[in-house]
Length: 180
Image 1 (cartoon, rainbow, N blue to C red):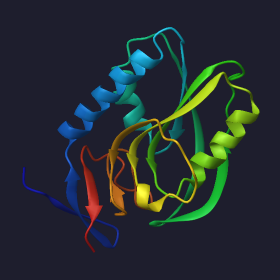
Image 2: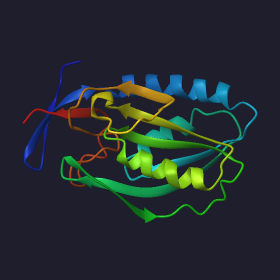
Image 3: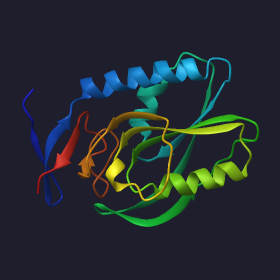
């Protein structure tokens, strides 16, 4: 497939990961999670807004009994992480003694995940793991063990498939990386 160039706000982006590859990687994650949590009935915790497409496509392929909830956290402004996690919408489910799987769209600096994991661990879950569509290992500023990663990518700014640039681009089926 040939890359397609799009423009969002003041930046141009080229197609980077096509929907077919995204779905194939999500299928592999779902199979691994099904095996790992076969008898545990996990609580999946989607981090909004960016994870909504990933959560939807992953959970359509999860076959074990499970629950889903959402929390909304933010650490982005424009194309850079602010380094400050802001909780916007809180967790209402009891997680004590539950197996929790946090579902993230992307982990780059790790500030958001680190802050969320600290909050969750204080609530005494039986276990807590992270599943992320994308991981930027070169950007990590925290020691994090992200157990489930669909794809590791370099430090490029990306949009699409739930990821946005100042509110736009979340609805794109493919993932695009910035070129200018």
